[in-house]
Amino acid sequence: MSPDEISAMPKATLARKNYFYQLWCAKEALYKALPAAQQSQATLASLCYQDLKMENTPWYLYEATIDQYQLAIIANSIYPESLHISELKL
Image 1 (cartoon, one colour):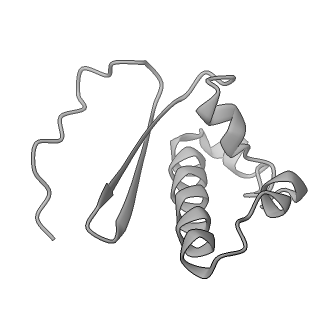
Image 2 (image 1 turned 120 degrees about the horizontal axis):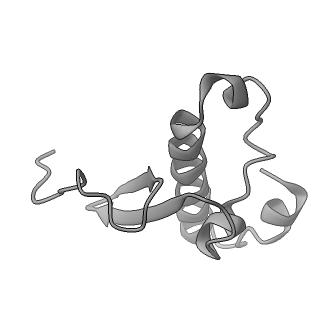
Image 3 (image 1 turned 120 degrees about the vertical axis):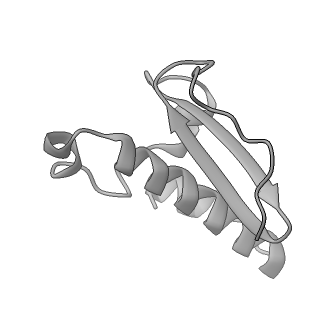
């Protein structure tokens, strides 16, 4: 995490855990969406969750929670035609 993300981490245990997984999933999804050349230059600390949330990047973040699991999807358009999530069985 970046220093700003660490300083924003909640103190309460459950909220802290949820925050960690929310950031981790979004950053991992973004990292996997990057071209290989950009992946080799990126670190998880350099990938900014707040920029994704504020739409300050060319990427769009879709987040959901399914039961106790965090889901993050990164797309390069606001309404990707190929994104259809109707049911996910765990």
